[in-house]
Image 1 (cartoon, rainbow, N blue to C red):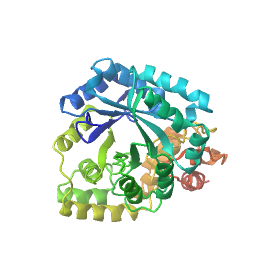
Image 2: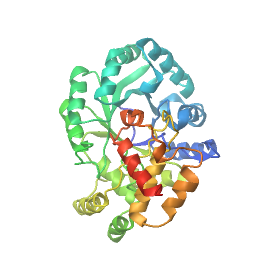
Image 3: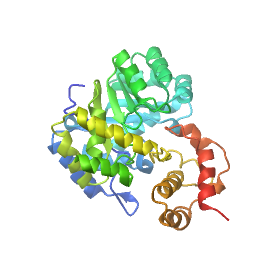
Image 4: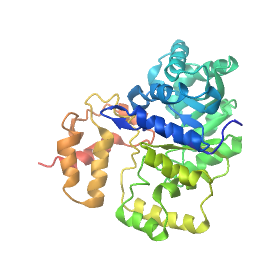
Length: 368
């Protein structure tokens, strides 16, 4: 892991888009700025950006720079294999899509109690370890979305795991539904470096409510900077990932992460106040990862509908109704179209009761 230059990574789940496709010209500018400023860690997965993330990295990064200029992480995602024999062909297709001969890190994706049981049954960890022995993977890791006890189980059964990617941000730090702190503590106990995902909680900690944002403004603290520095300041954190959608966001993050400094006690106290305000809103903690939408039989744009309900709670105006009725449900299903199959809840990293929440959305926006 000695080739990692700084503790800030380019998360490629959210990329610059133009007319439904990745804006590769903008992404090339972002990649260039990232590398020129001494950063070199890139994170992708097979399904990111509807399957476009890996190939965008091939076009914008791996075909333009020598292999020793960057660290590339990819993942084994459960939706793309059914049995052990499927894993190697999938892995080889990922190498080809990214245009590389090996991955620096390869993560067992979105591990939870249920997902881990399936990966174990398919001998996914054993297959990845064999690929590592062949030199096609440099470091085996996991990305994790469950309670700390499950993480303890995985790291005990597979001590060969070398790094753990967890959701860590100041809103989830002591949240009993996410257990960020407890998961971090398990990683520390087992001596595993931590890779942080969702430091800004899908943008929710950047696009704050007016009263929460005012607290940061009065303290002279930019929202993204506070969130990312909070995550990066914890002992054992190897990398903090940020999904950036344009060069401006990239340059802003580079500004405060190029010469990283942890948050001060004063800054931490300000975040405590912001956390209290946000939790008081009773908002749906959706990060808009969109894992839930791919398999929805009624094509419900679940994250967008949740965003409408959150906006209605915050602003209490007509705008959320307009977006619900005239944008997000024109070509996709309404909340009331849910058939309660439960596929979305099985894959949701936040473990949200999506079916129940969709009933709340329908009650708010589909009043007769």
